[in-house]
Amino acid sequence: MSLIGVFDSGVGGLSVLDEALRQLPQHDYIYLADSANAPYGEKSSAWIAARSLVLCRYLASKGCDAIVVACNTATAEAIQQIRSELSIPIIGVEPGIKPAAMQSQNGIVGVLATEATLKSDKFNALLATLPPNCRFIKQAGAGLVPLIEAGKADSEEALDLLGKHLAPILDEGSDTLVLGCTHYPFLRKAIRKLLGDTITLIDTSDAVVRQLKRQLESLDQSGNSDDRGAVLFISSKNEISLLEMAKDLMSSDLNLHAIHSSLLGKVS
Ligand code: DGL
Image 1: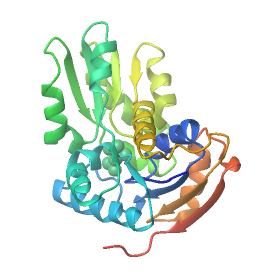
Image 2: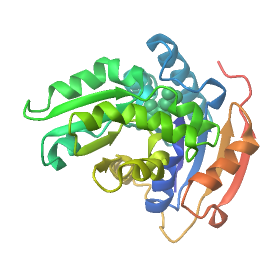
Image 3: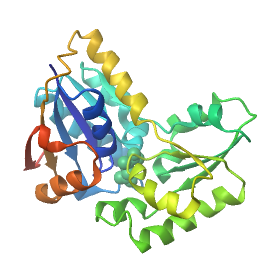
């Protein structure tokens, strides 16, 4: 059995933790939400890289055997540095533009992600590897993360803002939408309310957790999948609301796990 760190700027990475608990419930997890500093997506590359490195170092110091950087923005800006400094497996997430290109029928794909992700070299390098027969309509989801952090993913306010962000994607005729930020799977209901079933949604949590599973197998730390590990929720903002939000947003039954929560002290 392993201890796995899952890190995000806030509650978004809970979408990845949810999938991890589904596929790999036997492990222990530390979920670290830097909600005091969310959103990351509108901050500078240097700030995101430095902060992500500090928090991954913190998770490694707690004894994590592997870390999932469950944040597209932090992955885009910091994963190379994190990997070069830490000697444990580091699994990142990136917008699922490859699977989207394969699944799209008309070759027009919307990509909803943070401004920092869309501007990053890593994302643009990934885009450059794809054949030119698919067109990507990129849209920064400004303002969505703060609403999700405030527990308003299903509010009228979120619906309105989402409608504005999706308009250019729909106007271009996209049949597929990449959820390029780990917060956005929590907007699924709102997206369906606005668009019905007319668009295919691409979320990479499943692929990310399969990658984590392969890494753990190579460490020979698969564990017994009948067991249920513990989950520690740490927030830089307010641990009680993180736990409540986790219970609210996640579909996994957290009662099956030993749950703890704490507030992140000063880290540097
Ligand atoms: N959940 C994050 C992502 O996947 C970051 C959102 C943010 O803090 O702006 O990009």
